[in-house]
Length: 183
Image 1 (tube, rainbow, N blue to C red):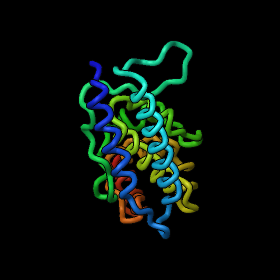
Image 2 (cartoon, rainbow, N blue to C red):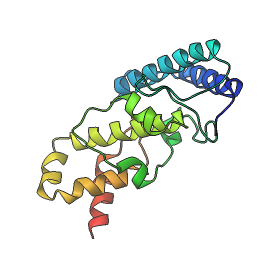
Image 3 (cartoon, rainbow, N blue to C red):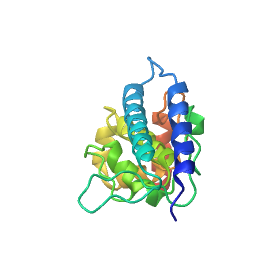
């Protein structure tokens, strides 16, 4: 289902305004990655607005061209996360499907995955950054290597686990939750 250019413009304007209101937390762990990703998302939204100014309708890109998000269905069912407590839960399959914790992830790839919900794409990136930060901890790495299935469980758990004020998972609570799934 295609969305009118007017509706898409309104949604993109709202996204840009929300991103502009967000104040980065200089002391927050992982904040620079979140700010960088938010900046890239804003740049894509501004580019898309420019494209809409030249085109009366929203159409999918031609084969072989650079993909731009095509809004389908509802415009923005996931609220924009302005605080860690606002980060929506994802389903385990949404988050962990084909997830490689060692691969670099671009915002373009994530936006293509959630083509009809840019906020959900941002939520996925926040959760991915929180999970990778937890996995990179010196006390977590050996624990994960001891039983490789723990990494799979952590991916599934990260889909909906609550983030702390630093936009991360509380290390001890998250580890306990992953361990409890194994029981």
